[in-house]
Image 1 (cartoon, rainbow, N blue to C red):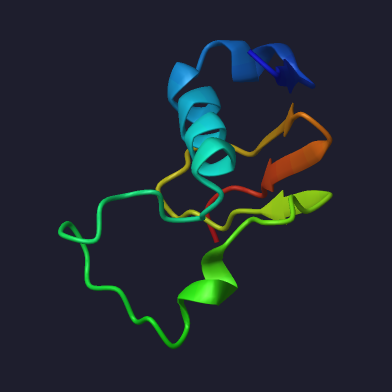
Image 2: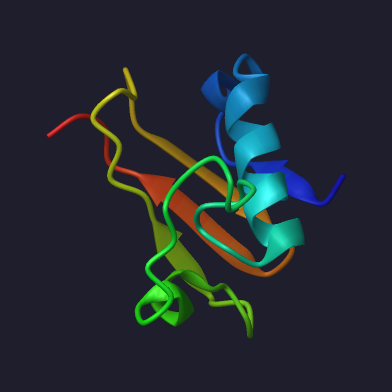
Length: 82
């Protein structure tokens, strides 16, 4: 599916793999329909993932632990809760 895990703990969380695959497939950090969230069109281009970056760092306070995984040539990292 294009996602390589760097450690066994990522294999137990399919939500991480699904979220990253969705972000990369949609080319956006917030891949939800515009009807779900307000879109600030003047700043929306800052959330796009095209062209694909070499790394994305996701700071998510709800993450219980850090993860590092890959999708294609892009490295995704979450350092864990702040």
